[in-house]
Length: 440
Image 1 (cartoon, rainbow, N blue to C red):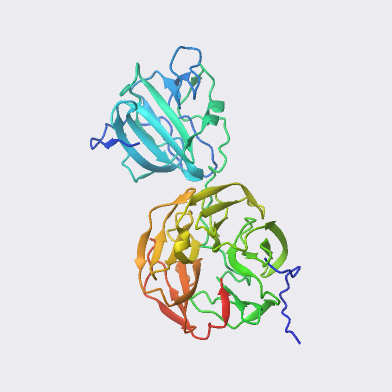
Image 2 (image 1 turned 90 degrees about the vertical axis):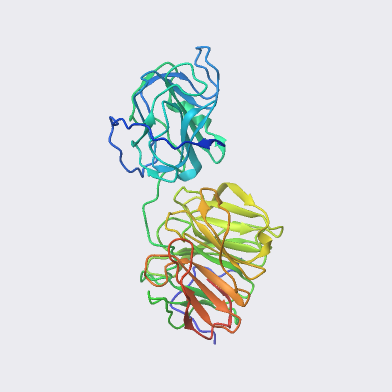
């Protein structure tokens, strides 16, 4: 007789600017509005003055139309960061004069141009909403003191910024921009990953056994795992298991692909286990890799990564309601050179990263940025004997995302993460894991 667990799935189914950097720091002018960390997605107006031009709109003044908003007047007064972010560029060009670019969550970048001199914050430094970053000037291609303010999202000019300004009106530095910026909300810091399937606050492992049982191995919070319990049976044709939190309720969910290509979603239940499932999309069976484990777009919601048979990596955006949302984001090609992927936030910056084992046996780290990934970094070699990896979860209780890997001899190892995309020396968890077709 088939063993039955107290865990039951609600239903069993076959699852499926190029510029030269300047090195002189401008004198700081005290800002009129105190800086404050932002988590609400609300930008502020960066400078005081009169709106003389908007995106592709000269406001009837005969001014040229361009990609930003011109706030004229009040030269020598402070320019504030419109929202929390990281300074990506501090430079000079013949058109923009002295300018600063700040990168924000949700794929947004703001630009502040024609400053009187170089900005007051160096590239790579974090800034908070309302923090002074420069002084209004008239450098570059400018006919008078003003701030040229641009907003970009995912590489394109964000023309919706026009809705926050009225031509020829007077605006005040530090006032809230009357505009909603989708995806700008900053997620509050939370635990590293979500793979707690038993409801005890510790990361667990799921294993698809050779007899088609889906099993859970409860984590002990210090890098070890207990004996197996059966979640359900009859999963012999399932493929691509991955943990996620697709409905943003803080509980571990499961995504799985079944033999007919359907991507199925199993929502985590209070106290552990699952309380139902839904079918999300078709055509997933031939995916080379499917993984989740983090937010890859910067909107604070879990997303899903998929690699097609041709090696194209795509980000499938999560809606936060247990579904996927359009549009999907194509990242790039060449990922068919990878044997295994594990997604998660390995640096603690709340953006998803990738650990990938290549066909040549190297382990690579791809640091995430909103809607994409930076150039890969080699972590280590000698991964040719590894037959399964998972991770992006804190298994040992140190607050950093780890990797778990199984060797061809069935030994399971913990590779603790150091919080920077690197791994510490591995430790043996236990032997006897060779009977699992998949581990997640």
